[in-house]
Image (cartoon, rainbow, N blue to C red; front, side):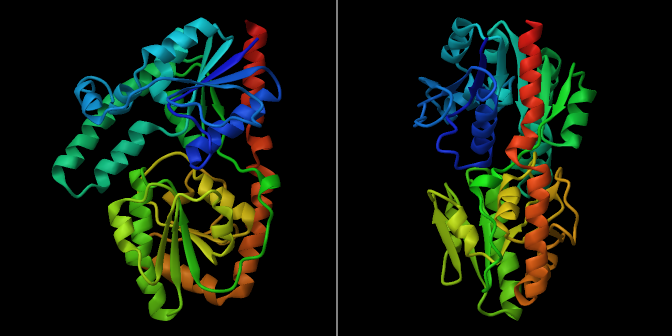
Length: 378
């Protein structure tokens, strides 16, 4: 009576949105039934986790991945692993859950019920990247990847016993593709581990992300190069903190007297605590943003593009502030910096909304119920 979760990398430490989702869903499942997590590459430090983590040797090579991706998505080529497939077959779990689209072959080889935890609709993400790409050859490459990925997603949808989606729009896409069952499991945050505090004074604007993910790198660069200079025209003391691992060369180059680029940090919360607002100028990407939920839980006002809060049941003007252009985001940031009452109201309303709708204990319950039901059926 075991559920086996399969992931493309260890989620430990949980220092990105995808890793946080895997860790918290695994913890929720482990509270109800035996769970094991199998990952490509090293297992990481799982001391204190309520489930074992097994790593399988996996060599990642960009050149080999490109060579193997003529007929399948690049992500699938990079994650192809006979060792992970063999482990899944040997474990014979009652339920095998793929924590990424790319490890679905191992989940389907396990012989039990199959669940796909779709963090994004990957083909939509790629189409957005293509639409935003100014270099013609790169845009063509993204469109080619989007086509291959959409075919892969459609096959995964019909092969899985159930698909977990992070937003209603993502759920509708998998239903159109013929998924037998779609369960809404939004992203969440651990409100017990994130104490609420009022927004500090000052004029620091933060962005948090993993910058190996191109949409995050582009958003952080927009904050530094487009939003912050407009804010400083009205609030000369304003500065920006770009927090998170794998900053790109362009982001490192943006560092200066008014822009701090931290690189990897052990905990983003101390950096959020010093921010007057989290600014999220996302223009592409998919899924829902754990960075937004964590900031709201901490009491940090959030200023975002519509895409940055897409899929989250948050109201503009009540829980967050939404603007479309860099100029819009800058004007909203100036308002939050200057208006203590507005900042305090957003802080309180954001925390209350996250507690009610997006705590991991709330959002993981449908997934736990699904696994228990699948176990009973078997």
